[in-house]
Image (cartoon, helix red, strand yellow):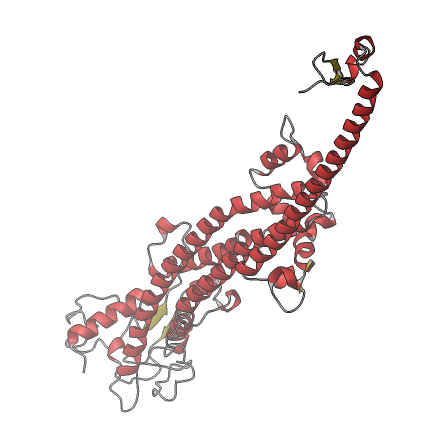
Length: 429
């Protein structure tokens, strides 16, 4: 059996958590229209740990997705046949990379908010659990408790089990991730929106929570609690007002409501900041115009008309379906080592994306090397042809200095020490 001191502490919890002003001493049970709100609230509060786990999972997925965006875009850029287009895509690539730190910061803030919500919600849930235990364990009438029905009739623990299910809810172990839609609405934590007051006098069942007839009872003015607020035959579930800011969220449910609202807002912001960057979002990044200026070798930052000319307007297909174009691009199996060709959107490992980048970059370098070799061969052939023509010209002039001087503009000089018949020769560089 609990001691008087324990019962006093539990009663304090009951008053503090519910903001309950139970007045009166009819010894009757507490009406379900009062305690039922606490059970409904408790079931919602016990979703907090799952909510945090769900947020962690969603943030992880979003950051994983963002981590892959730059490598995918890099592959897409290397695939472009036009060097001009490759250069135009570079500002998007580097602006996307710039956004990564801000996404991480947003995720950190969201996790901090989730921790604060879970802390307050779990604490309040624990106090409401004590309230539920208190209702179930008290009541002197045979088999009855301090739990009442909607008509304020005393109930047994078994009779009220259906309505009491929220108070018997357990924290999920191990944690299961909750999707955002399964979280309570922040405003649901403030229900009811008006105080709920109901008589405790439906039937006398010697409920010590509403009994002030004996000096040994908790509610008696001369009892262990001293003067109390229990002065009339009512039990009240008092509404909770929303806090306008964190500093004013001093009461437990106020803080829980405040941080749940912040959690849902930050969850939305996190999904927007990580893993879901549209082309339009990236083009509006702070450094985008600087990067484009460098690509264009321009003297000043490009204005919006220049950007629209290159990338289309906000409503154009390029911006609206940019990532669709990237992800629908087919990558040959030779690039990734897979057994079949694969769309870029289905390649979600850094290793395969890096392999594809190496594949296309190597192709580019090989092409440059082949082109350089071709140019060199042409130059060699041209030089040999030119030298042969020069030799023919020199041979025609032979050792005639006057004739050789006429060819100075073509690079010929007269060398008196040259071989016989070859004093006219090309000037050596």
